[in-house]
Length: 312
Image (tube, rainbow, N blue to C red; front, side, top):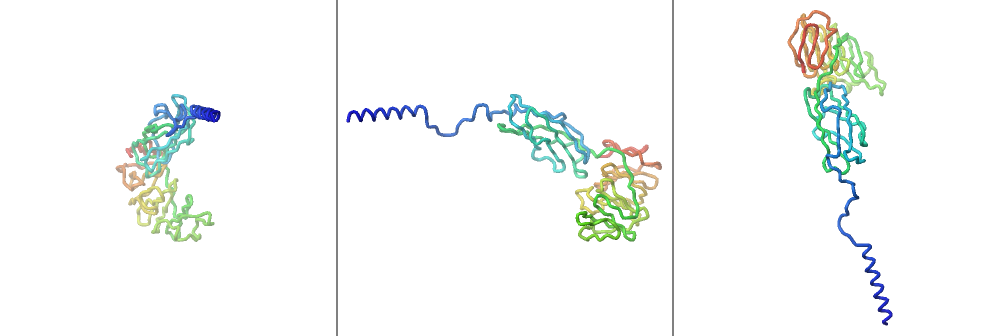
């Protein structure tokens, strides 16, 4: 019996001794050393520009450099913060950057709906271990697209422009969408369904006829009644597609800016600028009898011969 007690005591000593090497722990375990402990100041996001001028419909690109101050190896994602205007498309290329590395921020505004003037947006850079993203402000100045004006080439004949058909039958103009995948074409004899008609009204044309702007988002219609109509094919997002955004009496010629948002209209020996998006006259008439081929828009300065206007 005494021998058995000695053996039992020895076994208990061994079991208790093992517990020293395998302690029982409860609650959350500490993270591995050096993982998930980054501070926002450790992540450095450096755009090549913190302010940029953007023209309607023309992408602007800004190189962006991303580094970790302590040489961490965590990947970084940069996205626009909540509240970025809906008319601004923000893309980071590539979407994920492995620091130290570089990316390109691409900003694109929508013609007709982007607010002209100054707007500040915020980029947010996020990575593993950061409780708050690193925020970088970018100021953008939105302007109309610069460049030379081009004439509206008008005629009283059927014309197609990027799958929009201006169909003229017996001197009357009607607009349709053309679906190539259904074998449709734009011609006076083509059968286009009423469901693809753009707008509810047809327009009797003068001998001058009508023409499209080069963006195919607006048409200038020289109506039989003597008015020049600007027909919305997408140039004015706030207005119904197929509506008339402006009507000008007594116009003989029309020239459009590169993004088709500004029109120079000749009438009675004068030239008058119009905002095609809103239909508003944006400058006083200026006497001019010469060629408008050198008319151009640079920033907010609209120039045609000796005539100069300041437009937004």
